Amino acid sequence: MYELRSLSKNNSHVASSASQDDSADMVSRAGPSSEDEGLHRYDSSTSAPANMREAMDGGCQINASESDVTPRVTHAQAKRKNNLEQTILIPEGGSEKFFSFRKLWAFTGPGFLMSIAYLDPGNIESDMQSGGAAGFHLLWLLFTATCMGLLLQRLSARLGVTSGQHLAELCRQQYPRTPRIVLWLMIELAIVGSDMQEVIGTAIAYSLLSNGKIPLYAGVLITIADTFLFLFLDNYGLRKLEVFFCTLITIMAVTFGYEYIVAAPNQAEVMEGLVIPWCSNCDRQALQQAVGIIGAVIMPHNFYLHSALVRSRDVDRSSSAKIKEANFYFFVESAIALMVSFVINLFVVCVFAETFFNVSTSTILNEFNCSALGSTSDLSLNSTFDLDLRKGGIFLGCRFGDVAKYIWAVGILAAGQSSTMTGTYAGQFAMEGFLTISWSRWKRVLLTRSIAITPTLFVAVSTGIDHLSGLNDWLNVLQSILLPFAVLPVLHFASSKAVMREFRAGIPMQISMWVMAVLVMSVNIYFTVSFLDDLWEALPSTGARVGVGFGITLFFAIYITLVGYLVLSIVGLYVPGLQEKLGQTSNMYELLHGGLDMHDSQQEHHGPQAVRCPHAEGL
Image 1 (cartoon, rainbow, N blue to C red):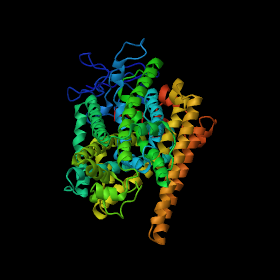
Image 2: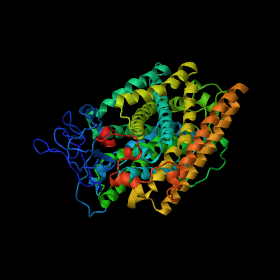
Image 3: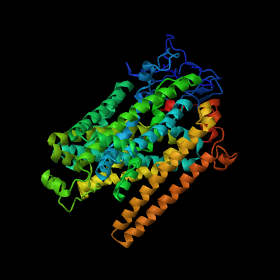
Image 4: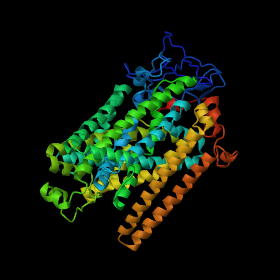
């Protein structure tokens, strides 16, 4: 006996097959109390009505010429569903109030999971280098980047709430096969790059905690086992999973907050760096680091993740008031979560702005007795590109004692583990959304982690820890390059009346989002060109330059073509007939709200009888 939630064309009518005791639960709740609790169920022994057309928030359709229905979701598949697919009920009442803490608590969770991407090891290293290169002068830019991230995350959350589909699913419905596959590959590349940063951070944390007794390659291998261990949290309910991630964020706040208190930065300089948008006497290294802040803070795959996570709350999409309420509370929750992440990032910047900025090499090596960092030739007066997660921990240990080093390592470990888990979820949402391929969580972890570990392990074994830490710079550049493949689809669907209905972004908001997107992408282009210029100069021979140049040229030919296609897709919202010329569907409203079957519209599925339900197939 199974139940399947189904909705009518306005996504409001909930139908369920009859159970033997007529007491079937219509909405799954977090925290399963039995083997099958928390799963949407379908009673295959009961005939489905012949006129039942949609299920699961639109786009899910049952085609049946007779009374019998052949479900695509089997019992075995249903048992593999994870707790992120469960639905948290929103308390009724209080609609006359402007604000309800009970409702805010019910909506709390997705924003904090999303905010972990703002605290990954790549961000922490960027914070260190920012403080070391420019002191407190770039704090205003860190705050600005976080605010821009909040506005973009707001759009992705509104997509999930309003349409009932996450960003990858919308891309699958809108774009034809070739650009859709290339877009998926780009997002997977971003996820693998992010996972490599988590692997590097976690391995360095183990090395610091063991005083180097755990070699880097062993730390890299350990990350495989501990990630699978955390996957068992899926068995304890969605709310407990969210609490676990919030606990990791709390650990980061406490550990990096301890470093902030010990470093005791000048509070007047901190406030000046926050409110004055200027970097006086900043050299080229500081300018590059300023650009790197934006590239490190805003992560491409995070938009896909956030648009999926918000669907874990039970929102009546037939009611504009309920959608508006959900959008409001998700925005408040996201603002709180990103403010917490900003404070943690601020702690790290200020610690190294106070202790490392403008400190001479001789002082570091002699007065602080920090010979473990290297010789005089390894460090220069204001160089921050030699400062990495490992050297930062060693430096804090030299300056404030071993306790500071170990606490720093615990914070890095929490950052690495939490970001790995959210990257895994983002990867599964992307794969199932773009390709309609549903994998169990452990298979997804095995794939992503295997791809990420191979180059990381090679660098760790063949070149050593310094080159492994420097790999984070490359990966931050990669995230910067791939950012348009998240920002442009978000802008597209947020501006689409067919997708967002009355919640479509207004003209002022669209203009603001376009200005922000162009600014972010322009800054990232500068960062990328600057980094590639340094890479070109470092290549040892003409043959190496030819090979690397050919690879870069091929990649950017594909890159520019896809970016141009995505831009034209947005223009197609305002130019009649352009979407058809681009091979895109022009009936998104019917797909999402009118009961058309997305697979039939794209001629990707055939057969007279099938239950097509992306949600039921697994997130």
